[in-house]
Length: 290
Image 1 (cartoon, one colour):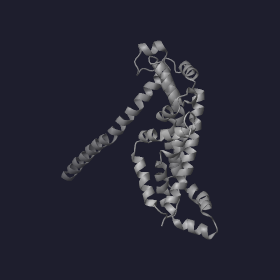
Image 2: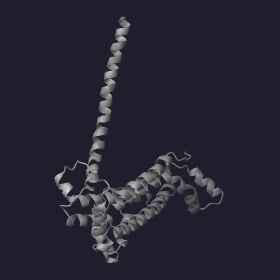
Image 3: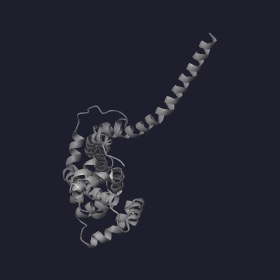
Image 4: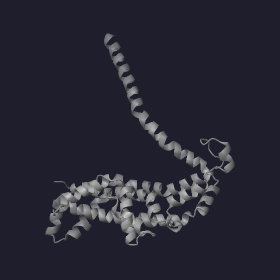
């Protein structure tokens, strides 16, 4: 009986500790999740409210009609978002594709070849990452203006290709884990370095490429400063610039602003959901190691 009593006592202690541990474990997750979701819910609810409904109801209250897309229609037409979406697509596509191509080739050279000042170049890359991008863009602006690249989409594209080189380090970590014996075997079969890179190395970088595409495309899509710095014409505005201009003219119409926010969020959410599958499936992509 004494043994049973002790066992029950220990079991109760373990159970109490498990409860406390679960509370400590899940509370930060729940709090952080609520902090992230709450503003999104407020914006989502507000985007469906009429002007009168927004002024007389709480921001946390759901709208009376979730099928009221008048705010979305008004914002899309008056904000001229169609042309802005096209500009954003051009910048995202060119900047992301160019970054993937340049990033993979640069990382491959840094990983596989030894050349003069290699370590110095790596150090320069590290230092450039630590410098705020705004300072770099301000210093680069006179150069691009001198060559006539400002005033159209060329300047932002060049900035997106060269200003952010974090993708090089992402690719470098993956390439360093790929055995160089694969390169040597391919060279014995007569493959050139370009063929090795195109047929062997690049396909094995699928998880890294998915990560770079997500980070780079979302960063370009949400960028506001670059467009304001290099392009002042409304014809060259991206969706972020158009939303800020539209919101500035309608400070008191939060329902229209919320509709605009929801519209520009849709592409990034869809892209992340689509690319996430490739990251998870490719994270264990086979590669032989030394």
